[in-house]
Length: 87
Image (cartoon, rainbow, N blue to C red; front, side, top):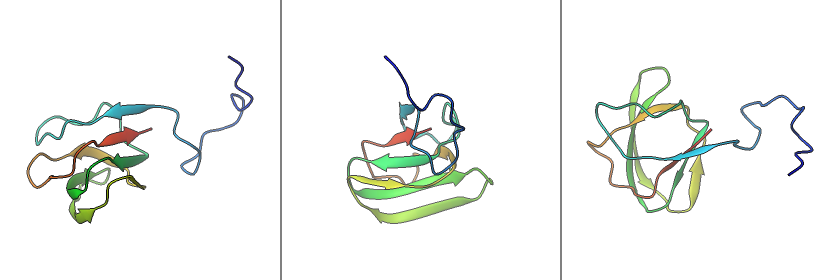
C-alpha cells in the first residue's frame, strides 16, 4: 500500500504511527514512551510521565485521547480500562 506521507518527518503533533494495548503495571514500563493515551473505559488514570513524575488523572473519560508522554501506566490507582498507548 502506498504511503503518501512516508517522506515527512514525524513530530509530536503528527498522527500516531503505532499503538500498543496497555496492561497497567507498577513495575513494567510500556514498550515505548507514548505520544498519547486513548482511554476506552472511564475511570482514574495513574501514570508515570516521561520526566519520572507520577500523576493521577481523576475521571478520565471514555473515548478520549490524552496527549501524555508516559513511560508507565500504574496498576495502583488506575481504574480506567481499554487503554491504548499511541506512538
